[in-house]
Length: 196
Ligand code: VGL
Ligand code: ZN
Image (cartoon, rainbow, N blue to C red; front, side, top):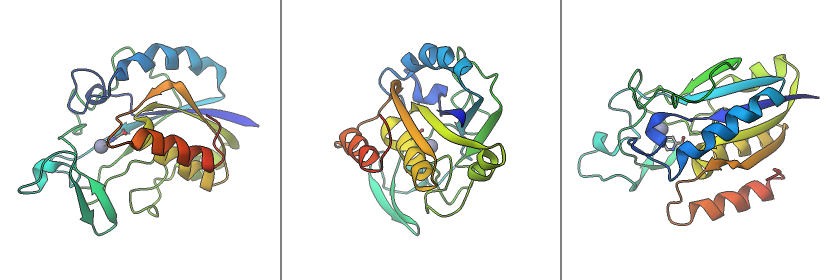
């Protein structure tokens, strides 16, 4: 059984001082660095939006961050501008080990967001990660990173649905917690058979 560590979005904008700071987001960095050597493969994801991305509140007249709007693919939370391609905010935290096997960028198409490392927010357009992992014979995944209730949760649920054996290591995750989203995420992941 080949075991991969999937490091979700440990980028400056999700750390204290960033545009979409997750409380204690930077606390995961030393924990994740220490975990990396225990895995057969390490994959890092990078939230990677074009300027003017449709998930930014600033792209919608009269809308404020954290409002929810209907997009053609379903409900979408509007965020402060964050993780714009090539910006300092989009860079990995400077202390994060980036000597992994693959860096997967997501959310790069203006008209659709991508929380999950596996599918864009329509839940059906693949990123290709499933094929990458299967081609390498990887069957077990441990997910860590930011944010527990958004990109980590979506990635974990998709991974479970795709048939991977999934663990989310909460000691190496931090959440945003919008209106109870953290508790909801933990319940949904447990219900999907994910090991927490
Ligand atoms: C994320 C909101 C917007 C995340 C990314 O990494 O959890 N959350 N973009
Ligand atoms: Zn984003």
